Each structure stands twice: as C-alpha cells, then as structure tokens.
Image (cartoon, rainbow, N blue to C red):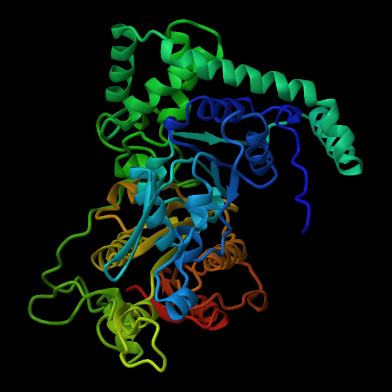
Length: 555
C-alpha cells in the first residue's frame, strides 16, 4: 500500500491571511458551511486546503472528490454481486459517507458535472445522503466541511452551489520579489526533506490546533447582543442579498471570529473581519452589476468625464432593438424573416436551414429514450440466472449545450453603424438559449486583450444592460481569443465530455493576423459586422480558416 505524500504545513504558508482565516473559522464552526477559494493557478489554494485537517482537531478526515468521479462514486452504489449471490440488496458507501464529520475537498469545483453538483446540493442542504434505486433506498448522515477551489478563467460556478458555500475567498498573486524567493526556498526545503521541514513547524501547528480547540469550547458562550445582530441585518439589506442565509452565516462567522480572538462577545471588529468572506459572492447583482458597470440616471458613470469616443468608443448608447415592420432598405438582415409581418427570425433557424436541419438545429432539446436498468433487472429476478425479466428506464439522450460568443470590441468596430445589428444578434442568441435552458458565455476581444464579459451561466432573460456597458477600443487580438476559446472548451469537456459548444465570432474582420495561424475550434458561426457596401472578404477568409458558417449582417 502506497504511503500518502506528506502535506505542506498550514502554518508555513506565507501570506493569504484572509484565506487562512476562512479555513480557521469553518474549522471552529463547521455549520458556517464551507469555503470556496477562487483564484489563478499557483496561489496555494490546494496547499492550504490540504493543510487544514492537520490543524483542525475534529475534522481530520480529508476526502478528495476527483474531477472525473462518477455519481456512484460520490453517493454510493449497489453491490450487484450480492444481489446475484445472496438475493440481498447491499450498498457500498461513497465519498459522501467517508467525508462525514470530516472535510470534502473538490478541486476545480466549477468543472464538476451537473449531476454531481445536484447531488452535492441535496446533501449540503439536508446533511443526509439518500440513495434510491427504483423503490429501494438507503440513507446515511453526511455532514462535512465542503472546500472547493476554482480558477475563474475556466468557468463560473452554478449559483445554487455558490450560495451553499458559507464563505468565499478571492486569492491573488500579490507577493513581492523577496517573498517569492522565500516561498520558493521553503518549497525546495520541503521537497528535499519533508519530515525535517514538518518537524520545524510542529510546535506552530500544535499551537494553532489547540487555539482552534479552545475556540470551539468557547463558541457556545459568546454573547451576541441585539445591536450586533441588527448591524448584520442592516448590512445584508444594504447590499441586497437574497434570503437569510447571509445573515445566518455572517453571525456564525462573527461568533467564530470572536472565539478565535478570545473574546466573550462579538463586536463591530468581528463583523468587519468576516464581511468580505460572507458577502462577496452573495451580493444581489442586477444584469449590469453582474457583467459590467451600471447605466442610467443614478449611475456613477454619469459623474465621470466623457471619453473621446473616436479612440475608445462606448457601447452604452446604442439604439434599442426595435420590432421591424418593414424593410429598412433593400439590404435586409438575414435575421429577419421576409413575410408580411416581418417577425424576427431566430439565428438558430438561419443556421439550421443552412445545414438542412430542423428549426432547432443542433439544439433540438432532450429526447427520451430507454436503456436496460440493471439494478431493477437483478432486483426483479432476485438473483435468478438466467434472467427471466428485463427492466428498462427512460433516459435523456440530449446533450448539454453552451453558446460561446466571441465579441469584437476593437476600435475598428466603432467606424460603422452596425452595433445595433450586432446587439440584436447577441440578444437573439441569448433569448433562444434561454428558452432552451442552455448556457451562455461572452468573451470580448479588443484593446489588445481578452476579457470575460459574461461568465458561464444559464442564458439570462435580458442582456441589454450588459451590452450597454461594454467599451470598445484598441487593436483586435483575434488569435488570442480563439486560443482562449479553445482552452476554455478543453477544460470544460474534461469535466463534462458530453458538452456541446457552439461558437459565435462577431467581428468586422479587420485584423492583421495571418490566416494560416487560425485553426478550427469546433462548430462556429462567424457573424460579419463589417461596414462596407462592398465587403473586403476578410470575414469570409476568417470563416474559411475556422471552418465556420459565414453570416454577414446587412451593409
């Protein structure tokens, strides 16, 4: 049996004080609800998470949920051999059972498949894992500290699971050159002789563990005066959080912080100390707040000096999309159906018809099929062989769909009047994806950089405020956005192999990029917004290099 590799001591990690505090608080009071750690690679996310059980007196059981885990591995499974041999139904416990009274650690939790997220949501809410197979059920307690790490560049977390994390920490690379050198030296010392390195921190680890244990014994005696509870409530109202979970978690965290500090009652200092950890991921976001600065009479943007739009531009003052009742010109948009009512036609329909598909194209929804249900089959036959009865179950054969929009926000796009058409195309995509309960992500590329304008989520009902807040300017990093889209899809498919991604590249094609540098990234629609009665054909060339369907907006 292989000996597990030693963990880097928690107390030896340099910096990341907010991260450490969050882990200490949930160790003191697991009912806070776990910690989500968001940040780029190389910020000690996994190192600190794995170091927690060595200082947490009552939570030494550390279970890792691997990225490729199956649902049966997580919740438990039926021992089919016992059904055959002994006509008895027996369940093998899964990772949730092993994590009871301990720590369940999920690295890259944002890449977790939806079925595992659903299972985690159920158990996190109830503290009980219930395994059911066609009328036969098994339940067991499953209360644990949930630790999750994620890199936001690889996709966001479902809101339902995000809210289940009591605390969230945003970690960044903020070390000075001297600190970086010291960190590397410490890591090298640990790798050379882990035993000797751990021994150096044995006293510090023990002191921290004892302090946590003392805080655990003190926590039930911490006084929470009504003015402090009212302060928490008022702050929650001020930031517009949904429900009361934030109030509960904030109070529990403040009490744990007071216990950690050796106090007998919570005060404003304790409330302030945990505010960012509790509220950061729970603020009630409007459409504008989620994805860009707000707009409107009350916006702070109205107090800012106007930029020179000849250089940077602003998407915030595009004309709203109107219901078209007659052609604007003989150059009719392919997004409009040429009939008496001139009703907007789905871009999905345009694309599907070009491929000879149904109106839903590659996004036809979920079709019910059936497959052999081995559990019910064995249970019905009570272990008899050969089998007398076969049982089937309905399954969904549809595949999850993500619509990935790559939006050109470079300065060259400001020289035309087709932002309204581009905006209409994006809204069209979003509305159809929303109706199909599909996901949407928007990446913007301009000003020599790629930025996430809308993180991966179920397509929202409205995107107008987001689109109104986007600035345009600078060059066109076309190759960079293509490569980022390629990496993004690859990372998502590691966790969800069945995921279908449709890319939409919205651009005027004015890039100095050599076309031979472009390679296909999967199913792609290029929407050409070049402003010219005679298009240069650059969009067609880019579409050809990407093996994409070419769709010009009207001149």
